[in-house]
Image (tube, rainbow, N blue to C red; front, side):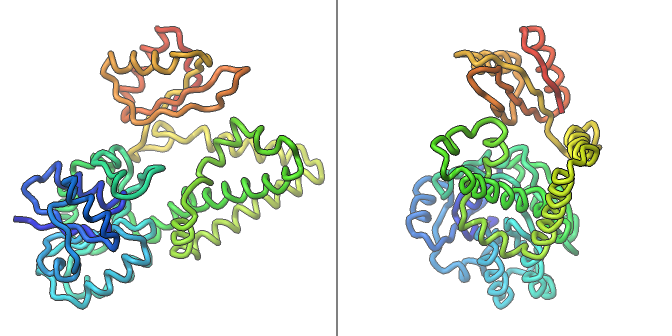
Amino acid sequence: MTTVLVKGIGLIGSSLALAIKQAHPEMRVLGSDCDVASLSYAQQQGIIDAAVKDWQAAALQADVILLAGPVNVIVADLKTLATLTLKPNVLVTDVGSTKQQVVQAAQPLQQRGINFIGGHPMAGSHKSGVTAGRADLFENAFYFLIPGRTSDTVVTQLQTLLSATRVKWLTVTARQHDRIVGQLSHLPHVVAAALVNQTQQVLADSPLGLRLAAGGFKSITRIASSDPTMWTAILATNAELVTSELQGYIDQLSDIKTAITHQDATRVHEFFATAKVTRDRLGPEQLGGLPNFYDLFLNVPDQVGTIADVTQRLAAAKLSLVNIHILEIREEIDGVLQLTFNDAVAQNEAATLLTTAGYQIVRRN
């Protein structure tokens, strides 16, 4: 019997445990966590088969060890694992949100011939903890793999283990991963938080202040609601790249500030035009074969039952949505409904269906 040890039974760890049990009910899943209540809940709900207090002892018997704690804990766990006598063919993997420090910490293990694959599922929830775990949390999300020198056979083993997650696998190096998530995730979180803080300061003496915030402001700052403790830890483990990317962003702001100060209309227009061209090119048709999502943007009136009508039509046609998002809803204008599909076929069928029903397609990506 294959034994899987999941260390860290929070949102990510519990969701992966559920996915493993769904695809491989014959496997034995052990759980370890410093929170006794989380462990107890996980065992009671069948998320894990057994709770272990001594994770190091359990690691000696495990065929797969999945480290699902914060990055600093993962790094410490890898150092501990390097001192243990593990099974010869054990597979060690993690789900840390940054990868260079993790991969470096795993080198002593790899030097002993232990298989290690760095991983990072790019999905989450506004909820946290074991009670929010679910097997489909990662469906259609990107899952980064950093296999290093690990063989393709072992990579396939991990993908088979996590097959029920239904993720989109992407293989990269640790530095590529940290650079990508730094620019596309870490930097935007810093920018969003800074914009909210600066707006609060500017409008502090206004009777209306942030109560007027809507549309674009809410869209661009939504991620500022993220967990501050988690983001403090993330930025600490990707500081070099994020500070470099942040400086590039500051330089961009400085340039446009100068153009506005000197009323350089040509430069201001170029600033927005360049951004528009790049933003409009986001999507699989323009950027090539990277696994992606397919969006439809619909004009929808702000009327009771409109969104239900759209989703019911899609359901009747057996067209599955990956995500749905309401944009720019205000009382005096129509809203924009963003519908995300897994492939171009579903996107095209939905566009035809909804156009026939009288809905206006604003654009598609």
